[in-house]
Length: 125
Image (cartoon, rainbow, N blue to C red; front, side, top):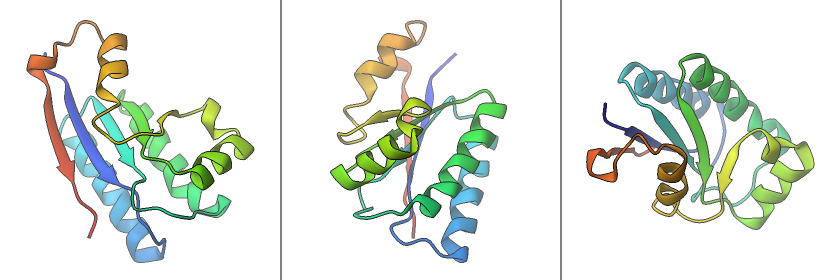
């Protein structure tokens, strides 16, 4: 069994169109057989608490499908919002970029070998 990681950019600005696109991407990667979904916040400079609703919704879909869910590239403001809302206790997060999360993920998934890693990056646009 190979470890399939799909990375999705969290929308920098949230409107109905981008939220719908984000949910379609989540559904697509789950249907494509991803074991791990990584949500990348690198383009998000500010987010309000209502802006986290699509993330929580995506988390529920991913968990129901039996996938792992991680968040990375969070700046100080985003991390503080996660702490204030308690989401840092729900989501496994990485402040650093998407490549730095691989070592902790592999240490928790010892049955997977890095040589079997297939990473696919989906870019939001």
